Length: 414
Image (cartoon, rainbow, N blue to C red):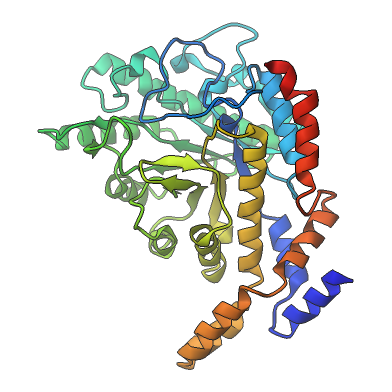
């Protein structure tokens, strides 16, 4: 049996493949709902996407309703080994019983999502939506100088925390509610201080009420720049990292929100010295913060290696964050999630114990040699076993399932 060969090969290096498979199965990935419909949502507020967000491509078959989006997600989950989660944005509310604005959202607009998630065995994560709304038309939300507009977005943040907490309570698994805003400036501002003071006050108001961490966890997400905010982003890395430390909350590291030459994996051990947990958004930024489908590439592998080498998996919530309308949207979910899981499996199968022993003994030549040799170990055979146990196609054959779904379901939407 091919897996037995791989198991013996790894055992010779002190690696237990069964332990790796158990950890992989116990590590959920939170799929992002917005890949399925190009960050459209179901509000129809008339607001442009904005906020530095842009989706390119017009591949046929985009989800147009909640029913279609859920069907697409079910197809994606069927091709991904393991049990995972769904990350919802507030603009994906279910308004079948009546429309309300974002400051008045309640659990009623998300109860159907909870019931669907329960039927699928999924946990839910959540995000306030500070974009694509008439009151975000000038690109400012929680930092807006108008107290009325700023107050509207503060109430939206409060509402989303209440919703996230109820999701977590009902599903029995904590919801991570992640706050990101697009606020910034296209050109050089004369005043960098005042918007950040307003943001701090807004956040303090949103997070004032304490919520049971068994139901809900708060995260804040920084950004380096975006389209329309090239020169100044209020919620910078330094701002949010400081705020997360001060308030001992989750800090979100997004792979597309830093300079392309920065090593995001190197930040993990530093950040986790000072905050209890992190939210990791796995993406592939290419130049101007364009979020591409995750590859099984060196940056993704490095992220997972750091989580495993530092024993950080128990303090990390992993989600995806990209949107690509140039290819089959369901396929984008499947490719990105499978690649993330493959990278994690490779990290779990790395002979970390031997590498540390060599490092402690000053054998840096041996350390480098083993790191490189580990890349060609038969991890793919272990991946096949993981897929077999999950009753999911292991190799390229999953694409046949996707193409059948495209012919029978997606084509009818054109």
